[in-house]
Image 1 (cartoon, rainbow, N blue to C red):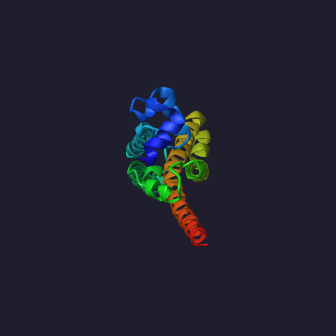
Image 2 (tube, rainbow, N blue to C red):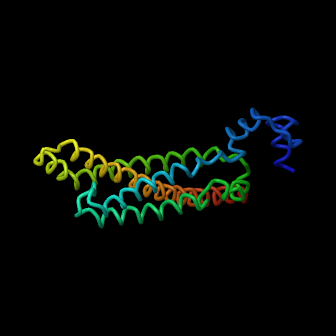
Length: 203
């Protein structure tokens, strides 16, 4: 009943009667009353495909990554697979906190969602940069060998492949870490708000 009245007050009778227009739906999403559409999994699958291609190429004579980093490459693809399933599992999404949000006296999730997005985005960028720097620093010898062997362009391409592998694997792994950190922060913060709300009601 409350949700029906709230929707009518904000978006008008058309939404409340079950015939929302595109503009009304957009207003609901801006107010965090409806979940935002999730990014398609194609991007995450694309990351896995590129990492898998690097693993396959590593087992051929055209291996783009130094043999000393083969174990690191397999570890990276393994962690990326785990991170992919975590990100696609639906765990830690704002919709899972609907009951807690109502307990705070509002159905608008305008406080946590933007902060969670910032945390997740920050971890993703940091992971991509850290992964690229790590792989670049451990694979620079392929560029040196390329220069010594009069094939600098080939060595540079292989170095760029290594850096790309590091950026992709680091980004997706740290995205899953950012999701976990954001979820733990939100749970802790919600408990504090609920305790404060209960104390105010008692007083």
